[in-house]
Image (tube, rainbow, N blue to C red):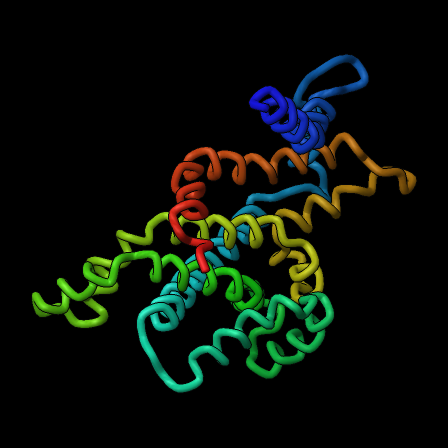
Length: 262
């Protein structure tokens, strides 16, 4: 039985790692052998990645992660610890956002951002990404808070802590794995998001790195520069892999310590 588990796990690992390994191999393969020519072309081409594109991606990801953590933590704490009229209905409505394909309402959101004066802005893009992260994030944080023994909170309040003080000093350290999981998901979604920036951003100076990689696809005579594209894929994947490697222990605990309970 254990051998079958190992075999299945190995097969799945190969299946998921093969595209990334192929991209890594293709990104260093040249006509004369192997080298970094594809990466040089990715960053030196007129349509390639610039420092501004990377900075835009970092700004959008940071705003999305910060906004998602603040809203989902506050909402998750309220849903998990307080009783108020319409609580369950409001929670179900929040989860119902998952059933709406976000691509179908991007045009409406684009118009809404125009009314708010946030069209073609990184802040507006971040707000849209935060909205679509909230269902999963609120669900995760609510269950994370519910997994914490109520006695910890009661002891803090007996000692004179307010609700906010209890949240900051007692509850947040207790739900750290859930926070890491929510933050990691928000980063991965915002860093690699393509469709929303494509619709919501018009100025090339505000393009994110993923849009710059797609612009790199056209070489001379309309051909596709696959080698530069693969270099772009690897460049976009490296931050995700590094971040996951550092946070994987807390990430796994976020799923196994009651974060998805109930």
